[in-house]
Length: 402
Image 1 (cartoon, rainbow, N blue to C red):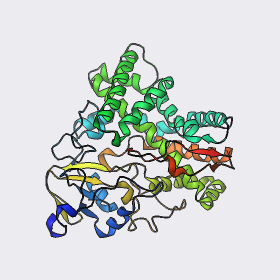
Image 2: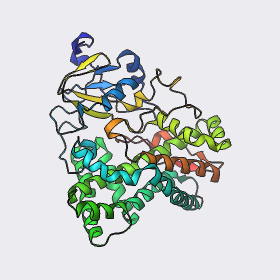
Image 3: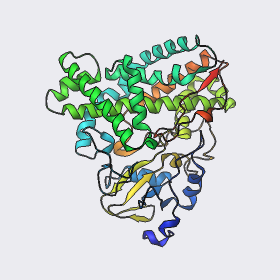
Image 4: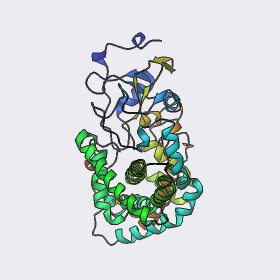
């Protein structure tokens, strides 16, 4: 089947939705899963990549090495009309063999066993933050006092980044993640963090500690396995992804549970429900909603449609996670659901390196929060605080009382 067999002329193609309800994907995705599971869209200008919405097709694209992540390839469906300048170590924009070489250096710090060893520290951090939260005047901002500092403290501890620099980190991480701010602001955000971590990496090489940055400096950069620039680039990605996504998941997870009191009651009543409940929240919320972007390096057939070499692809994870062919009644939050087939962490070569850490933080923080504050309630409407134009969906504030 060729693209012109089933598609209307380009001017009538739908644009990629950039706005969505707070807890649900944009309504268009639900229609496209059944009506146009693989169709061209208008991204910007005369760029018309394929949009993938069906779960089966999403897995196929993300696991196929013929789809490249290199965002400098001509025709790549990037977030901006012009390709951004790249820095070494940007794993999300790399293909093998360099991607494989660098990712292997990080895997030992994010194994399930390593993360299990971190659980006591995560519990301690969570408890200390809750101690501080209950002292705040009500309503208190849950983002400021709990959902943002928790993952940031954990990733700073793991990487060896001073938490005292959190305002600098948050400001520039937010700049990089705000697509609507434009390429210059995104470039400046990444560049500021890249320079900061380059300097910190040099300090660690002279006075190493017991952290990931020190290990990269002494075991990888010093031996020539990686350049200092590659190490800094990897650290920027870990620092941003290691707190932005989990912070949004925590915030939206609280909103979802408070709006589904029967599900929250079930979670409170049964500790064994927690791991599965976190998987269902990850599926239901899917905070990464700008799409996993790829470009075909040769002709590939997906879902009965031939995607030609040089054509871009946008995989809509939030649509795939609401595919009725995989998840019965997909728009319903059901904490007892077997949701382990979700794609919230991506799939294939680029699946999220820190997924075990994110799971641990969610599994610990949500039950502790609702146990400590059984009367927790939203103060006002969470929708008014929703991010606009951010790569990671969530809220910038979440006023709560108890």
